[in-house]
Image (tube, rainbow, N blue to C red; front, side, top):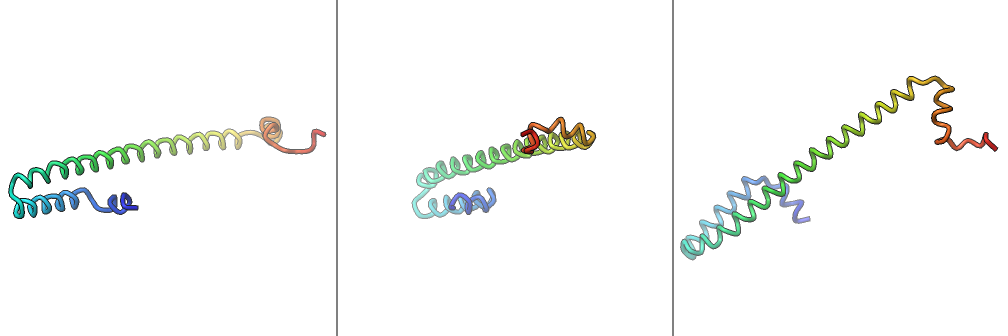
Length: 102
C-alpha cells in the first residue's frame, strides 16, 4: 500500500523533499550531518528512478506481447472467416464436443 501511494508522487517532488530535509539537517546539525543525510537520500532517489524505469520497460514489453496476441487472433479469425462451412467443420472438428460420432 505504501509503495502504491509513493508511486503516485512524481520523482521531482521526492527530490525537492530530499533537498528540504538535507537543508533542515544542515541548519540543525551542521554540514557533516547534512552530507551524512544526503548520501542515503541520493541512493533512495536513484533506486526509485531505476524502479520506475524498469516498470516502464515491463509495460512496454507487455504492450508488445498484447499487440502480438491481437495480431495472432486476427490472423486466426481471418483464416476461419475465409473458409466455407464444410471446411470449418472439418478443420475444427477436434475442438467441438458434438455427440454425432456415437
